[in-house]
Image (cartoon, rainbow, N blue to C red; front, side, top):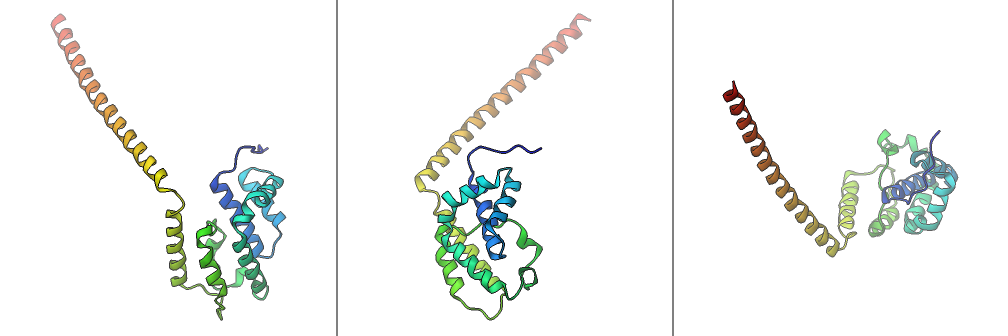
Length: 186
């Protein structure tokens, strides 16, 4: 029997929730099925997943939901698994598009390609935009604070290493003295 979690939602869990819901929308499945899948993965109830989606996550991914619905209507002509670019890897968790990259999403959705094949150039462009948007997610003062904390912890580590080295030398000296004393007593 698995226990049902009642702790706060982490960013990773929010991303999993969004990815699974968007995938279900693209595939023409229901959001309820998505909530059940996420609930099993995260050991939460499907109701908790649905509440989290509707109360906090859905607003962040409005353009992604619109894009997924558009892909769903195109996908009815050709099943997802039959598309040339669909692979086993497409079933793995892929982080959903952050808010800063929504413009890129809209740009890609506006392109009406004659085939459903993704080009390497589009993938690289998306990843580059995503990387840039992730840099902007953490404020610089928080980065500086983390750098200072990292420096402080590294200094403490060096101090502890030096103390350990001294203690090791003292231990060896003590063993040497005890060994000489043992030899003298014999």
